[in-house]
Image (cartoon, rainbow, N blue to C red; front, side):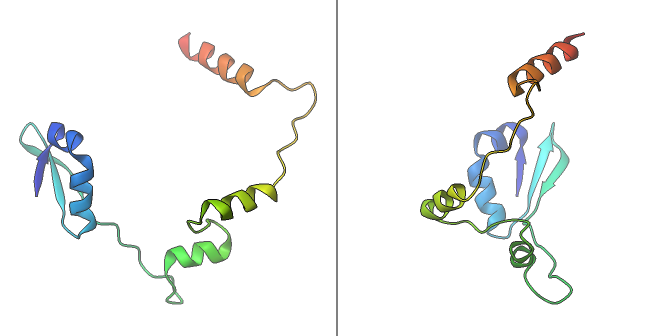
Length: 102
């Protein structure tokens, strides 16, 4: 299936469902192919386990849970401590933005 950039942008959800179903979408820029959107397929881990399951087991990612799971997880975490006298995040951000302008 082919789609020009404007059509893809306006109907992205529909095209992504097409890709999820296994079909490839070729993106055209001025009638020429410039990109290809293909279904994501992960190779299995060396031991044969699913890559996402392996990442969950390693603690790299968490599985999608219910809001109750998320609330419970947040209750077990403590906020990071900020060193006294250090700049606030908003001050650092403003400074970075000012540097980019010059």
